[in-house]
Amino acid sequence: LEWLKRAEVGDEESLFEGLDPKDIGAGYTLKVAQSLALHFGELWELETAVLRVAAVCHPDGIPVALFCKVLGKDEEEVEEALRGLASRSIVRYDPTVSVHRLMQSVVRGRMKAAMREVVGKVVAVLAEVFEGAIDPVNMVRQDPYAAHAEAVVGHAEKMGGVERAGELGNQVGVYLWNRARYEAALGVLRRAERIDRAAFGDNHPNVASLVNNIGKMLQEKGDLEGAMKCYREAERIDRAASGDNHPDVARFVNNIGSVLHEKGDLEGAMKCFREAERIDRAAFGDNHPEVATDVNNIGEVLRAKGDLEGAMKCYREAERIDRAALGDNHPNVAIFVNNIGVVLREKGDLEGAMKCLREAERIDRATFGDNHPEVATDVNNIGEVLFLKGDREGARAALVEAFRIWIGTVGGRARLTIDSANSLKKLGLDPIAMARQIAGEAAAEELREAMEGGPGGTDQR
Image (cartoon, rainbow, N blue to C red):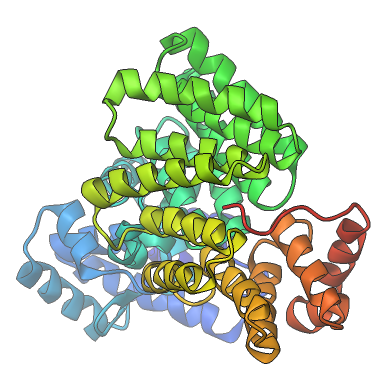
């Protein structure tokens, strides 16, 4: 075909690589490729560079700032190039940039060897954007770049050998986890794991970090055995690579303890949490957020064993540390305040409990939005207090909202969803029918099967 020749793409197969099959042969396909073929020779250098960056991103909503960072150009120069491309109908620009997937495929085919350089530059820039992804307070700043990071990690995996690609995949996976997009997070983390196993081998700390985060996704969705397998592998790798007293080992041991706690092995959990605390106090001192997490987890075990005073002491210490280190509106503070509220509820101080739980809810809604599992935990615990105060309608509304969030995010096998469903049954509601209405038949069946395995405990975070 003459238009393929003019586009300087070798053949139709390479042109259509990566496209959704339903798009191939559509009426606009020839028009899009012809448009690029007619105009490519007219592009000036910066227009070509901008188009190459767009070709390795998600096709929609590319921020102008990303082009500026990758190309080292100021906004005015990039905007001039984008207006030129838009005038030829090669991209859409207002105020972010969109480009047709076929156009991206043609450009990638033309880049050939240069594509590795482009992908590498985009990966490097986005790895800086997603630095600190573990902290949910960074999500709003990272939101505009997330889809493009997912896309470029996919290209990097196919090419192999792109520096920092696995690191970026790990960061984006954690970002997606914070956004409660667990299936997407797991997919990106698996991709990053393959990248780093190929780059560094199976026993590298980067692989340990990825395997640990995959375990977090599995635990969130209720796969405790799969999570434990991941945490054990991460622990083994880092003990061998970094020694027994490295903070990463503490992190993995903490996660092992969380699974043991969830499975009811309180002594095993406490042993893990105490080891993590010892390592982190030695590494960071007594007033570090990692220590706050360890102390909070010890408090969780004490509460499960009925030691409310010991648990409260731990939660108060964790709260004090993180308010000083992270500020009053950090989601870690919300976790500790929530746990303080639960102890106050169990001690009969319903007004004090409600005050704490409302503060946790306020922080989490501001951080995560209204449809996040952390918000569901807050709302669920508020519902429990309302029930104890005799407000059955308010309690019912809160517990239904919590269930709606959990079944829609973590699914029917997660402990929190199961516990929430059991609470709804006590109110005379049918959680299976509700799950079917909210999340579909598969989720309802998943929940039905999981509920036959027995309840856990909704308060733990």
